[in-house]
Image (tube, rainbow, N blue to C red; front, top):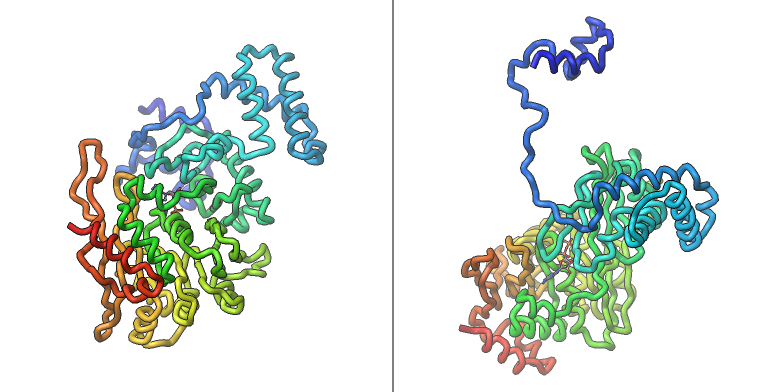
Length: 482
Ligand SMILES: Nc1ncnc2c1ncn2[C@@H]1O[C@H](COP(=O)(O)OP(=O)(O)OP(=O)(O)O)[C@@H](O)[C@H]1O
Ligand SMILES: [Mg+2]
C-alpha cells in the first residue's frame, strides 16, 4: 500500500510550496499525505453493470486497424480541399485514399471488413460517425449519448446500453457541432444548449460541457418515416378496437381534445393518429417546436417555432404562432406540445369556433393535465381568478386522452376522460374508458384490458348525433362494457 502511494506521488513529483498546500485542499497529493479521516470513498467502486447489446459487430482488432488507417488518412488528406467537394465526391476521394493506405500498409482483412472500414471512416469524416448505424435503424425510438463511451437506445419501449463508442469526447462534440450547424446554430462553451433537427426530421438536443459534466449529452428522438396508425395501436394493445372507435368519433366530430402523458409515452404519435380523422376539406394549422406531425389532409399549414439566434434575437415562440394562427382563418388548430402561456391562446381558440382543436401536454393523469393547464395560464401572467380560469378550461376542453409508458415498456392509452363542468371551484370529469391493469405475466408483461366505465351517453352525445355518429358511439361503448 505504501509502495503504491509513493509510486503515485512519483508520477507528479513536483515541488510543493508549503503555502499552496492549504490553498489547494482538493489536490490529490495533499489528500494523500495525511491518512483520510473521514473515510473518503475509494476511487474505483465496482459500478453496477448494465448489459450491453452489440449494435455493430466490430472487434477490438477492427477498431485498432481503423484507428491506424484513420490517422494515416488524416496525415494524407488535404481537409480544406475536401471541404470544397460535394459529399459524394468527398466520399469517393476518401475511399480511394483508404484503399491505397490499406494496400501500402498491407492490412489483412476480408472484403466485407474492408467495406465496413471504408464506410465507417467515411461516416466519421463526413457524416455522423458511430451514430450512423443507429440512425439507419427504424426500430430505434431514441438515441441517448452520455459522453463518448455510453450510448443508449430505446427499442420497443426498453432502454438498452449499446457497444457503440466515440473515439473521445472531442469526436462526439465534433459530430454534435456538425448536426447543429445544419440548422445554422453553434454549440460550444459559450452556448452549450442547442436544439436541432436532422435532415430526416429527427429531433436533436445537445447539451455540452461545462453544463454536462461527463462530456456532451446528445439526445435524438428518431423520426419514424412510417408513423404508427390507430390500427397499429390496436394491434399493439395500446388501445382496444372499441376505444379506437371512440377516439375516431372524437376526432371526426370536432371535439376539443388534449392528449396528456409523460415523456415518450406516445402523445405525439396519438395526436398524429387523431388528426387522421379530420375531414379532407377542413383548414388545419399545426404549430410545433419541431415539425413531427404528418397530416395527410390537403389543406394544412404547418408552422414551427424558432429559437433565438446567437445574438439572442429573432425568437418566435409557440404563443406567437398560436396567436398568429387565429388570423389565418383556421378551422382547427393543432398544437404539438402546450407548455407555456400559449395554453391561454389555445383555450381561447377552442372556445371561439375552432372546434376540434387539439394539443398534447405533459402530465401523468387527466386531473394533473387540468392542473397543469391552469398553472400555465397563471404563470403566463394573466391576472385571472382561478374560478374564471377553470370555467374557461371547462368551456374549451371536452376530452382528455391519457397516454402512458408502462413499466414493461409498453405504451397504453389509460384514460379517455370527459371534462363536464364545474361544481363550485372544482372541475368535474368523467372517465369513459380506462385501462384496467390486472397484473403481469411470467415474462413481466403487464396484463390488463380497456373497458368502458358504463357511461352510455357521454356529454358529447349530441355532437356525435349532429355528425351522424351517435349509433356508432353507442355500439362502441356498448361493446366495451363488461
Ligand atoms: N402505442 C405505441 N406502441 C409502441 N410504440 C409507440 C406507441 N406510441 C408511440 N410509440 C413510439 O414511442 C416513441 C415516442 O413516441 P412519441 O414521440 O409519440 O412520444 P411523446 O409522448 O410525444 O414524447 P415526447 O414527450 O418526447 O414528446 C416513438 O418512437 C413512437 O413510435
Ligand atoms: Mg411529443
